[in-house]
Length: 112
Image (cartoon, rainbow, N blue to C red; front, side, top):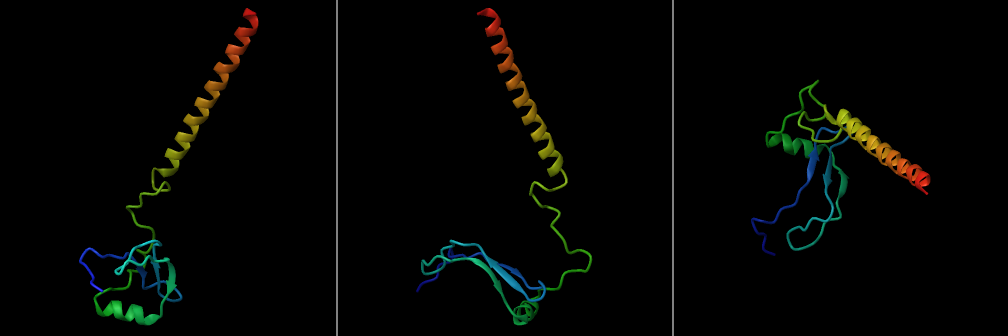
């Protein structure tokens, strides 16, 4: 089997997870040889952490562990206010639509 430089598989490694290191592989990745990965979470043993540390991986600094500051999810610093504002605008649009619709009906009833 020939492995090309473009063959790539993504796997996320959490060597300091408790109680044991874990990895995550997204599903449906084509790996070298053309097979597709099932993906999922896999538990490793401390050997994984030891091997990664031999390549220079260091434990996280205490107190700095947490969600990344560059999180692009909706629950970021501006996420919840943006969701609340979008909901408010949506509710106003629905109320305006219903108000206009019922006004048209009442005007049509008077004209007939």
